[in-house]
Image 1 (spheres, rainbow over the protein chains, first blue to last red):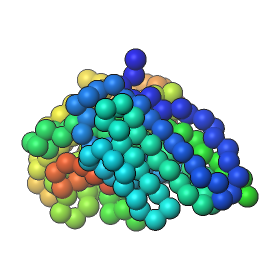
Image 2 (tube, helix red, strand yellow; image 1 turned 135 degrees about the horizontal axis):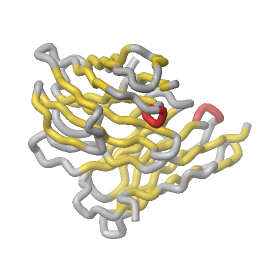
Image 3 (cartoon, chains in turn brown, purple; image 1 turned 180 degrees about the vertical axis):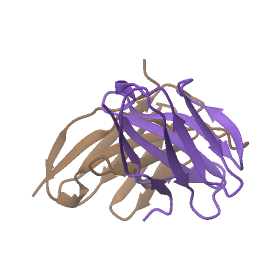
Length: 114
Length: 111
């Protein structure tokens, strides 16, 4: 079993729809959870960053973390064609000594149809 | 522009050769992380440096090595290159822990 599981898609939805992207993980030591957006093999761009369980909202994006279920989600409201990209979930264990690296999901390829 | 600078953007080289990839972190960031992204493996953590010292190793091959210099820029050295080393190599930086800011990557093609 991989540490982080993410459906690769593609996920195709019409413009204006609400998009739900999800990841599950197995390592209960993960404390920090991030969502990155990556266009056409460019550098990943940080969208959302959360530490605790619960919801965090930023504009059209909402990140949700459920540590008890080891499940994280990213919701995109009023989706736009420009949101078409690969969305990567990432998580880490932060030891406090600066020694850690991110574990990524494989990424979900999202297509927003005009 | 994320503030993390990677050079070169593209690199084509032959099997058996050695290359060096360079990364300049965002101003003020002390940690540098290297990642490899291939089509079948996704983004894989290679190695981390913090203020010049190696702090963590991930799935880094023995043919690969890295260092961080006093001005905090980092170099990733890849030697005895194989076709399977063709991938995107990303550098990320942070102050200490998460979140991390990524550069635009170096696309390495081994022929």
